[in-house]
Image 1 (cartoon, helix red, strand yellow):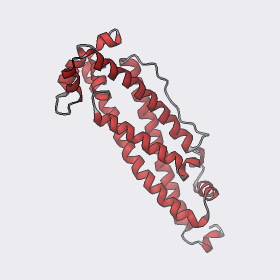
Image 2 (cartoon, one colour):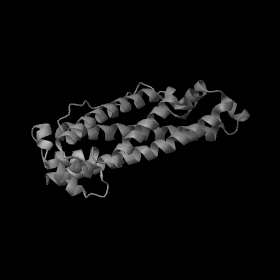
Image 3 (spheres, rainbow, N blue to C red):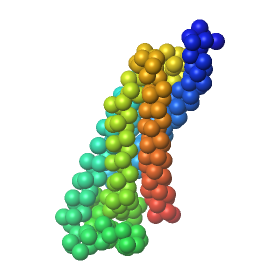
Image 4 (cartoon, rainbow, N blue to C red):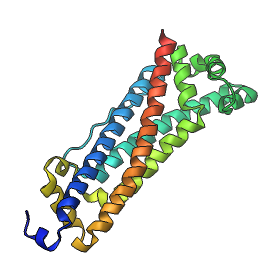
Length: 225
């Protein structure tokens, strides 16, 4: 037991709590990197994009890694906006509005996009149309992606942002020292509460993001059968 533990008997429990929170955060970050790379792969293959995959910066801070994902997602959104603008330009207004209608069946939307997607991409498949419908014609997916970006930006700007990713694998004492280096001891409880708040939001946003991308890849697989 550390000497400070005699003065602060709650410290051992807090060490365990901090370690647990950090591990969850690292898991969410890792999942977001993986999901983003899956999406990049789908866009490159089916919509002709030329996006680079991303990699977690193990010697970087949490903020740096959040920023890597944010920048990648912004590039993805830019590519999707190009497709959206092309669809709006090529389709009749009534057909374009159907793409935005949540009541319209997905199969109908794919059929609509299929009419013009080859003109936009040069050549196209039903899988490309499905990707466009899932990512461009879905306000739900757009909202999920935007929420992830917002949460990542908040985490990067918080106390969490300054902590190095590598420290997460160094054990409880190292993590605890890293936290204490960023805040006063009397602020530790506040810091933990802050972590918990951001983690709840991040886990929710990350899970929805991962689920949305899985839906896209599953739809693509169905169209390719």
